[in-house]
Length: 499
Image (cartoon, rainbow, N blue to C red; front, side, top):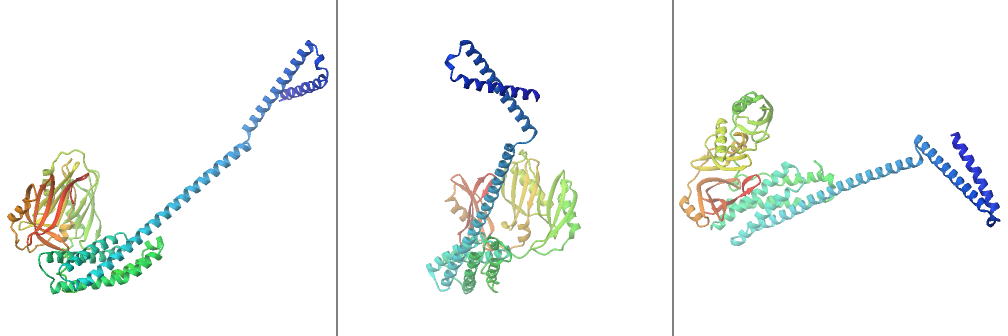
């Protein structure tokens, strides 16, 4: 430090002398000798060197000071960086808030649109049903067609409304009833028939119910318009209350009209509840080949088909199953699958059938097999008197890598299976096959079937064949020859599908 001070003092002295020489020499600059000029140049160089050394010393000293303590520049940079971060965070939060608000507003607009659409279809259906009671001939058919369309669209609009599941189900059932009635009456009229007195009463019931719905839809619209997003979605809110009042308009089906609307399938026969312990024992027997461990009942579901929930492990894999209260297997599933196809479709059918027989299911007919990757989905249906009962279905999933069942769904069978009264078909299988051959390149199957349709079952001839490189499945009414349904087989990423 002392050396630096000496250099600074010497530099100042030389600089003063130089300035003094400049002042004195300014008047006699032209009189300097060559020797004096050289000495002067050397002195100026020494002065410049001294000044340079002083500046370098100052820079080094300032650097040491900056290293010892943070300077204002660093503090300012830190403050600026923090401010930018805070502003960026604020921007992100603000954008997120506006995005959430926009999403809620869009959802609210969608719900309101569904309410408006629902109201239009109810109003149109009410007007059409009021005319059905007095119309005849072609006009009646046109009106019933409109009722059918309005009913299906009104039911679809329910899916876009924020409504309670139970209330929506009741309204959906009513619209299904309207559509089913219209469809059956249209077929009857097309075949030359006319409405009976009972069917006219059914039309009156549909109109009166629909008119009550129409009278309450303005309040529903008002509730949707006045509610903000959170209120519209709130259970027990104003809109929810208006929708509950709408559901009350449906009421009960009048006595004596269940036959017109097909009626619902009777509830499954109530067997003795075997209890939790017996349910676990049944599951142990059904899955004996899996060598289950830690079999346990985790609860019981109530409703139309009460079931015990059962869980167990096998080879490190968690399995879940449901055993109906009467002891039959209702559901089964396990995660994972395979990659190699060591078994084919016929093997999958054999493996699935053997599994179902071990669970007590017999008299089943395989109606469909779809393969995807190393997995096969096999569909069975009950059979009675040679007729396939399509309401009584069981789906079985088979792993074609390991050759074992990895899932089953038997609820439809358990809820619907019962002995039917199957009448005689007015049309013969031969006549149906001849008619089908005129439209198909090849007919492979013609067999009787009971097809669920609008809450009832219709005796049909099931016809399978191909045309133009596509496979088709058609169901022809065994009484009048009309087509009840036509399906085409398409390939998807998950195997073949019937649509």
